[in-house]
Image (cartoon, rainbow, N blue to C red; front, side):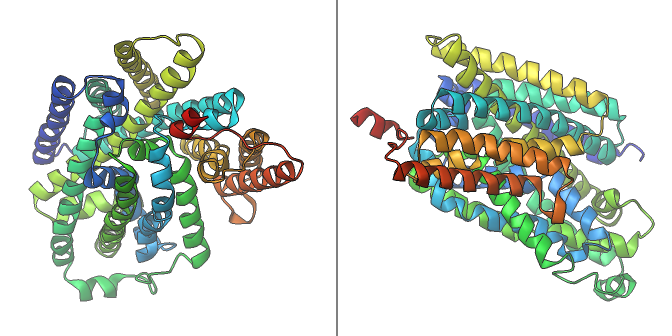
Length: 474
């Protein structure tokens, strides 16, 4: 693809704006480690909801949904890839107030309070390892999208993406991340929504589009209900145990805000769900000879005005990089708070926590860039990282927040059981079409419940509370 001048100018201007957000946030907002790691726990409903939405369906998912909509397997039903996320986040409205009530910064912190040092350390290692791999994956994805959208060499695009991600995350922390999420969510939604009538008109109108499509391509359920249900379960498991999602609820100003944000986030995802799918369908009708991965780019750049193409390009790139900075910041937070401070520097000063987290942001970002530059196919590693990160701690964290009689052994054994279950299921190549993350989470729940019920019957006392106010009372 040739260098696109207007989109390139818009992308550069947009990303300079992101760097400015990082600088201004650092100058006027960051006073202590909580400001840096959880935005001072001051985020309102709109901030949290938009950040949830942008992290899950903003960048890569837009391109990916259009790509799936282009194919015969998915067609228009590719919109379920996002709508399933909207449905999957709704149950978090129940858990979100409990997450915020814990007044924690990381998932391992909560797990350790309830189930002890061993459970917390295992969770920290699983989370940090997976998040590092995901950072590399997202930097590669960001570079790939930059290369495709504006015509830069892939290696140059990867370095450029890593530089932007590292700089504005190091400067602004979670607040800069959340603010950029808010902006890019509305930019990408506006850009794609405005692009839809242009691409439909440019393709000859809706009648011409439907006439050019294979039979059944416009079915809302073409992919099948089994796949749709699996996506909903996968998203729920990922959301309830994903550090980058939980960090948003930790940053909410109160418990009510966390609950409302989960519901509003679901609305934002749901409204957006089928927009990129429609564009992918139009691309299939108008440009059937292209690669499916180029569906959204080709349709928007060829059928919509250049300024819309540039706006969409900037938002997609920024949203994809947002996933990278979220993974990077969460990994650094876990390393500093749950490993270094816990085991090596328990009396570390608050400002030094910020400095150390920034150092690890740079280390993890550069490490992720180094891996991305090799252009290794890490899709399998990416999927495996999600399973390993979420399946093991799923029950210990999620159920540990609400099941008061849960025992210490239930937490530890469920983490091990879920992680091992996910690994085995992945090695077996996911029999019966059941995702490794879903199988591992199921094992985690069963082990957690069985051990708790058995030990309760044996008179084993419950594990300590996950909530600081209840621990202080004792």
